[in-house]
Image (cartoon, rainbow, N blue to C red):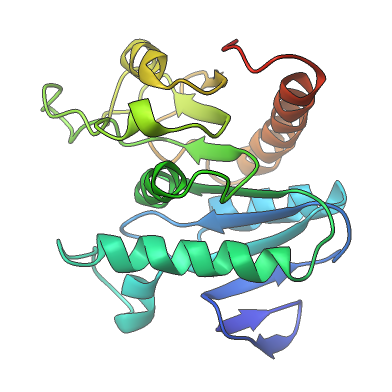
Length: 224
């Protein structure tokens, strides 16, 4: 793994950047199809979670390690999911608390798919701008794995996301048997926020995710 704990480090799992501290809970974050672990959104979120006491790994998926630019190919998805599973295992080896998994767009989709394939892999999911369907092709929904998803999940979705309306995403999550909540980012597109707005968004996501996890652990696992 290429990685940084605010300094260069190497390990055996996925390429990425870890943010201190190394105690408490852990979070693995994956980037979208056109981005990398250096995505401003992931950097802001990782910093915010770290300030809140979590250890965060923002990782480069295997397809991004193989090539610096361009989207994943059709054959990359299974390898990317395996990379996420290795990253979660690596995180469990360095924290004593819970381990969460999430990502933006393609990264979030692969996170949800590997969680459906491997129940218990992560304690909860953070899915940012889930790409429900390709822009302009609402009938091609990417939800076939939702009925097998037993991991609690918080979706964060912009009200102007061309990859799925907030209403469509909320409706689609009803197919998930685990506890689910949807956090709306008013006026946001697929990138959720830019520039100075990233800090405020990251703070809000951390607060809402922690509250979501606490609600899940405090009561029965029924949805919402």
